[in-house]
Length: 98
Image (tube, rainbow, N blue to C red):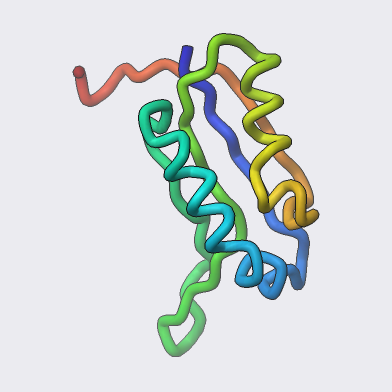
């Protein structure tokens, strides 16, 4: 079953994200076969058009809710205390049709 992970960074946690990014990406690489989609959530562009990373969105194949919770808890970003909140929900692809 696919699960959606909506992770929101703590305010002012850009340094935590930067310091743990390589380890987080390696974690995702080790689970490539399970990943449907993954990427950062972005802030609205500032007046110069710059955007910052403010969270993460992942869609991951997990056997059940317990496995989804374990996947989230073992993410290096989570271990480093980056997230203010993490919502995990079952997800079904409807469009585009596979």
